[in-house]
Amino acid sequence: MPEATRSPKREGRLWPAHLVLSLGAVLTVFPLLWQVLTSFKSFGESTRVPPTIWPHHWEWSNYATVFDSIPFTEQFLNTLLMALLRTAAQLLLCSLAAYAFARIRFPGRQTIFLGFLAVLMVPGELFLLPQYQIMQNLGWLNSMQALVVPGMFSAFGTFLLRQFFLGLPTEVEEAARLDGANPFTVYWRIALPLARPGLLALGILTFLWSWNDLMWPLIVNTDPEQMPLSAGLASLQGAHLTDYPVLMAGSLLATLPVIVVFMVMQRQFIQGIAFSGMKG
Amino acid sequence: MSLDTEVPAPPPVRAPVPEAEDRELRKRERAFAHRDKWWGYAFIAPAGLGLAVFYLWPVVQTLYYSFTEWGAFGGTTWIGTANYDTLLHDAEFWQALGNTLLYTGLVLLGIPLAMVLAVLLNLKGMRGTGVYRTLYFLPVVTMPAAVAVVWRWLYSGDVGILNQALDAVGIDGTYWVSDPDTVRFAVAAVGVWMTVGYNMILLLAGLQGIPQDYYEAAALDGAGRVRQFFSVTMPLLSPTLFFTTVLSVIQSLQVFDLIYLILGANTSVGVTNPAYGEGQTVVMLFFQKSFFDNQRGYGAAIVSVLFVLIMALTALQFRLQKKWVHYA
Image (cartoon, rainbow over the protein chains, first blue to last red):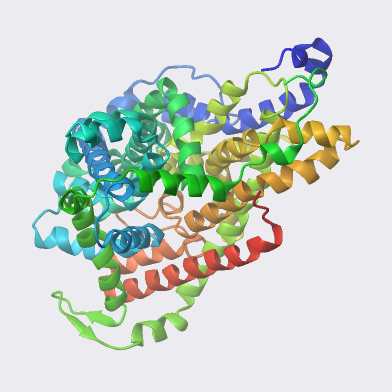
């Protein structure tokens, strides 16, 4: 940032901006903070009027109750596996198709691309009934396949990566081609490494969406052992409708992994969101 | 970018020209492309087949189902437009549609809010932008199911922190999410809370794309801060603002998990929330009819109408953009 603007005089004028921004930040973070504090209170303390801010007695048993009420470990692994498999599949399949749309000439390319774009424009709920039937016919209800398979394909991801490939310089690819490399080698060895920022953006978004997805798991996997955490949290709420400390503990456990990933990779997260916004 | 040393370049020179950039891309593509068509088909096939089976064909099927009735054992019978006739006279559907539209409108109010935050973060010499960005972004990455649970607690009528805070200043709170008068506004507030960070990031990226020269040129012409905002920032940010609005409308019209769980719709004893009808959205109704009441044809009709509505509202926005969006 420019040095001239660091002078104390200009800094001084920024305090109203800081005031507004901090006030907003407090309002933004407070619900999450309250969630953490409540998750450590006993049920009795959580309902006290006036409320206690800091837990008098740290009630760790709320977390144990979560593990007793839902098969948390299984659901955590289901969520992780679902998110990782969907993300890995999308990165591979979308980048392959995207590379073809950006760099390979073949009859029907425009028409097929229009088909991809058409999918991009349709709201997700229109896919659900037939997707459910496919899962039912394959006997995949209450299985990992049901959670993963439809989410492996993405028109959005293909479009995002196509835009990214189009923006990359072609010189190295051209040279490799002249040296006799086939299109797959050029894609795998040259284009893909160059597209890392785009792949990272798509990977982060897909992981986040998969982790948080609720409706599809509610539809296909009704067996608690086969649910991801989002659906597990919904059933926890069904069972402990007013035991808020337990609910807070459960929702914190379900979100924590993503929050941690976000904290570690926030720059990439935010750039990924901004990038998809710019190109989408 | 110091204000005092260099003479600002005349804006037109630095102006981004999208068409030229596009032409450049196409030229580059012409210059280099593999011409082996079988490789092309092989690259497209996995994603293409998956999309065709799980996405493209299902759209056709859903539209077809909306004209059918489902038997108890799965067969479908063609019943013409009967589902749509029912829909027209279904008070529950109209209520859900009204709720969804109101939610969408209220969440849009978050965009000016996000705009203010983005402008403040983009101020010259602003420090701590990274910290603010992180904090505002937390609700965006938080699982909506968890968000719903947390806000139910904040909104709780008897012991919720909101009512206790209001009580302290002498205001009588209510049962926010089970009071038919407040439920829609209560959930919309959460919608704004969840999306402000996201919209702010998009708008901030747009603001950062505005060349500093424009402001310097405007300042030389005697434009003050306010004038600069309306004559430089707004027009140049309008494409981003437009995009953010379109996206926000599309997403809000499909809202499901947040409201579904805030209303506490998932208990074993069924819906007990007296304000459920006032809170229910179109997608929630679709979910209920399709997967619980086994009225799949009717469910298909509901989402088909939603599809048309989303398309129409998006098309309308694209038509209206000529009046306010400036492309450089």
